[in-house]
Length: 166
Image (spheres, helix red, strand yellow):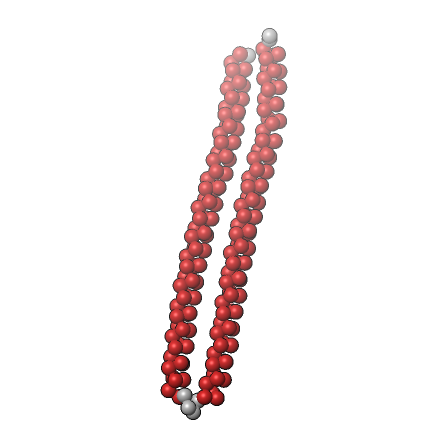
């Protein structure tokens, strides 16, 4: 095989490599875009889920408060009719109601604090997952870049050999 035939063969190989590189880079870009879309969709789903849970909890709290308000209104009406003969009992009952409301408030605050801690934990977990995904994407891009550099190095070596053979 002559030098010219080798040169044509090497040019064909180089053209083949150069023809596949844009496709591989495009494929990698597509995979990165798909991964980015999946991460965004997952985050959106988690946000919706957290919002739904929070809204559900808010509705439960509102209903409980409304129920307490209705109970208190009923107690006030009842107490108004018996006020003259049960003034001492009414004072005691008021104290019990206040203590119950305070207990409910403390209980609700504890539940809110627990929910707040759970949300913080879930958000932290999501941040860690996203960091891991970022590292994976960076590693894939680095690997593709390294392969590309190896192809270019091989091409440069082949051209150097051809130059020396002339």
